[in-house]
Amino acid sequence: MRKKMKNLLKYTAITMITIFSFQFSNAQNETILRDDTNTWFTMLNRLNINSKWSVSNELHERLGAFMNEQGTFLWRPSVDFHVNNMVEFSFGYSHINNKPNDPNPNPKIGVVENNIWEQVLLKHDIKKVHFQHRFRQENRWFDTVGQNLDGSYTKIGTDYGNRFRYRLTVNTTVKKLANGDELFFQGFDEIWFSQTDKLAPKAFNRNWLYLGLGYKFNPKTNLQLGYMNQWDVLGNNTFVSTPIIQTTFVRNFDL
Image 1 (cartoon, rainbow, N blue to C red):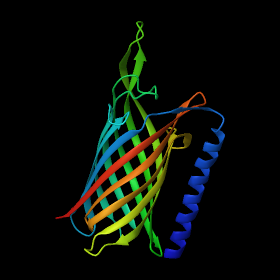
Image 2 (cartoon, rainbow, N blue to C red; image 1 turned 180 degrees about the horizontal axis):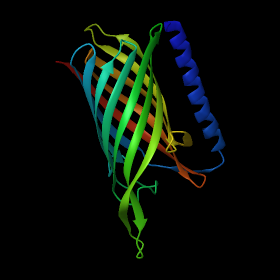
Image 3 (cartoon, helix red, strand yellow; image 1 turned 180 degrees about the vertical axis):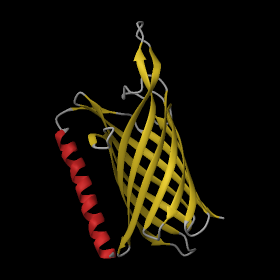
């Protein structure tokens, strides 16, 4: 059974990455805007209630122009159910406050998004490499913006949309230190698709590619520093490529 699941996850990952590669290849001759280096700071916490249940929380502070512009602040709590060591279900909420950030023309002014999301996380190992496959369905309510006669912009209402995200994560120990701490590598690729009201894929929106190193102080605490490239589709054959330096602190607790 485990072998069949590993094969299924492998084929799923190959399919999703192939779709992204096709989309990317189609964009090679289009207009690509180069963003300034962004700096993102993330804190991830989890409280393990028992072997089956946990509650998690994420805080994200994302700055543009190398810490000179406020970009996005994000708060994301969730409740998690652990079927076993390989399968996890989560139900969560996100509050996202976005500010304008050149050269991306959207949003024109500060806007807010609230969404609820459902997630499946599947895990498996190949020798000493740990794999995670994250499937997330987002149900989004976000501000819409209109232009005034004087050229300024204002919020005119709220719209609804669906979005699907798939992330493939790999993690492996680089070196075990004499004091018991560990240095590890972590990388992931995540693709985003907007959807119709019936949840059918509509358009490729974004890709994240991340490579980083982490220092594990103990099984519940680690600090990571990495580089990520964000690739956004703006429409009209225009794309934005954003280099990001990301710092992540992880601290988990047991009840």
